[in-house]
Length: 570
Ligand code: BGC
Image (spheres, rainbow, N blue to C red):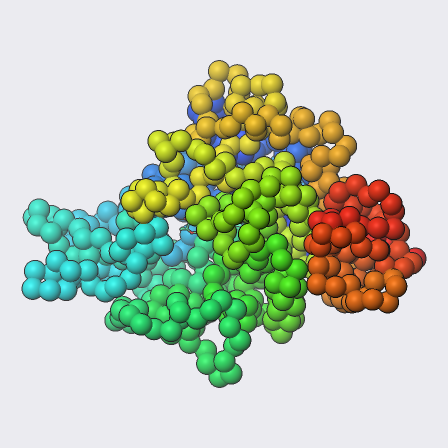
């Protein structure tokens, strides 16, 4: 039995403390030279992940796909897109990752499939009223000729959530729901075929040793019967993070966060628990408050969820403290470990967000405001890493975070591929700026993303990526890469870090309150974290010794502005 698959309790609970690296396969490393990342590229760079010190990787969709939404339009959940490799390559990668001490999570996309999925093609061919159409959400249009869409739902990428099909006789016909792009028709989760098929997909990958799944849009899936208009319902109008209303379980939204979705997760949990070791799930559940999110994490449902409140929080101490407190309280209610996330493939990179002079709630390029101070963003980014890795629970690292990458804000218009760009009438530049292929070697063509003579990367890399190349950072002891490696090594060895609890420290050594700009907490045994978000130096707590700091200290007892220190008590 490998070290990874011991069946003692510590090993079974690995996910409660795990640091998971989000591996965006298209942009990680290109092994075959076609300009797109692939499984061979991952295989060739497993050493980078081992040296980094993470526990697991989550790989974004690698299934056959027309790539209308970068692989989130899945044509076959139980295969591998030829551009990424073969099923045998995937199996070999799972084995190699396990041998290297890394677990693997895949991305499950249960809300929708590609319009090229055989089921959707069969539904189009079979026509209105057919059993094939029942697996999706087809409806007749409103109005005398059915020319008006059946309800007022909108697509997350802009425009209506309905597209009208042309029937076999060449006439305009029924409409179908797509909460994302038209190439991503929503499945009908009231249909037994849909439930059975996704369960088969879970087993297919679990049988191949995959350790778990990230669940795409976990708050969707179930739609209110009758598909009513959203109209003026309250949900979208609530301010974020409202207090839970006792006894009210419905969010009153016809397609987000419906209570019936929890039955789906109960049945998946039973499947995951039937494996040895049990497999795990992480939810992408975007819901109005953390108490609603915690419902996905009840003991018989999903294991963890991305903490979007933390990710979305501006770099402001009072907001971060509230998010941390709310997160800890609501997760404790259901016995689930929190996670701490700074960036992912859907949001502008955190260094660029924190570089904005005005720190507002918002994670996309179009929402960021104010003059940009990149040095400040970098400094805050490093401080945020040590904060996120010190808090109780698990943490995520989005590929390129460890290289201190910034958002690429000036990609040429004709390079943009995110469906939001065209669907918004070219007003929303979308998410490509955080998806640019990684730089590995400063002096190599495509910065070592592809082999010599390879096609150009699928998104152009700016010249300044050279400064962030792995070989440059690995040679610099003060680099952000070294900070991640040091922090992850300490975290792995320290009994206080990972799952557990924390206590705030409210007072500086002179007895004065730490003030509005400082977050300080301790964890047993003997670990203290101080985040100085103010513009002034702050004294470190009495009786502590510095172990690691996100920026250099001029004096070992004083933490400079925008810096996090990890300390040993005693
Ligand atoms: C994924 C996105 C994707 C969308 C539709 C999201 O939550 O993270 O990248 O576009 O789901 O599948």
